[in-house]
Image (cartoon, rainbow, N blue to C red; front, side, top):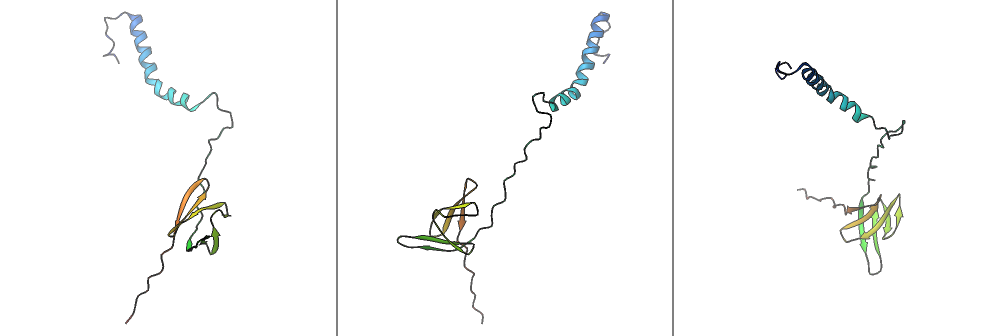
Length: 121
């Protein structure tokens, strides 16, 4: 610190520079503490820990599309467009997939692939 302060400076200036340098060295610790304390925050404030709930395990076993009706078997139960169950709404049924609305988000359920049958000799 003495290399920064020259002896040709008056005593008052050297003291002021030393005080300023000492304050600058302590500033990061003081700034970190000040950043943690928000005077507008209520005393018992805890940040919300909003977590997205896990998606329900839904599977489409079959889809039936007729002239006047579209039905999908979801988790073993027949469901039509517009049906609601377990907090889920069936939005649209396509030949290969079903669009549902779950917690305000659109989710696509694909038709489960049929098991492959192999011939044995």
